[in-house]
Image (cartoon, rainbow over all chains, first blue to last red; front, side):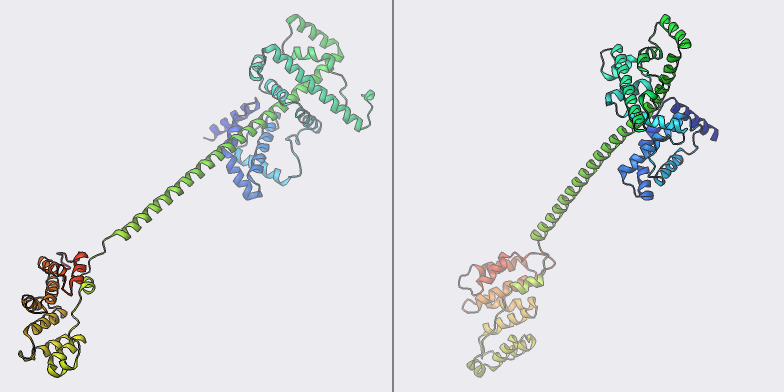
Length: 186
Length: 267
């Protein structure tokens, strides 16, 4: 019996690692209200804040799986996620993006990428998510985004990537300027 | 930390290579250059790192957006369910109030229009107008002391004593119709309708007596008390239609009230 459960958990972990988020989506749907009641009793959180906390914890959990930081699915996922929420509540001042346990340089890089990505327009974000996360073909991206054809989708994706690179370069210059590093020194 | 290499000059071909857009000849040439051109090699590594980070960010943001979207849908659903429940509760309350009001209205109508239960004793007290008896006077006291005593006892409600005094009276001292009439009236006051009836009947048949009219009323009431409904109605109708009968009005009242009905509650 436990072997079957372990196999199911391992399968869920594998699915999540290749980008299948269905498990987390359905977990949220099934446990949102339950979690909100728990958070209200334990931490006097109002429902909206509790929902946000659960979403953050789920994204964090997903990041851990995707990064390979979590190599074995916890036997009691619900308990594990509530524990993560508890930790977050206890360290409320710490703004986690789920990258703390990565090597510092990598965590910084990803955090920066996340911040800069959010500076893109919503269409650009969506297009890049379709291409780089959902691995849609250009044809499918064109269909989803309402472009004329795959070539337009490819050009749009190239533009988005350039925009992101421009933002990264600008951000890097500002950081270097603040640190007193001359551009020629790079 | 400035990137050691500016990607922009390489970005187009790096993208085309990474996205599999190159022809086999282009790809072969690009791979050749990648091995020999340190600048391109470094640009390629940076590009790979950026796209790897981008994949992570895209996954992170996809889940975040999906959860936010789901949250909004769940909120909307809960709100819609809440609205539906509130509407149902309002309707239930409204129907409850309507039902309660209807019950109250039915109850009120029933209370207003219900036929009160018959109480023969109460009806009798309400509708029977007893004879006031002869008024006390000096001549009555001096010439007919027993009649005066009988009347006094009668008015005081001492009916057996009144009857006793009446029966002791010599017959030549007072008219027969008076003795018979008061016998009947006093017996009726003692609830002895059957015994009162012959006295009253005899007086009512004395056409020359001034007490005949009165006797008809008391006879009718004696019939009612005895449960002889048709006879009671007939006698009282006769009284009610007689314009000179002093009991015309009470006779009409008791007939109009329709309390003279054949039932076991009749007296």
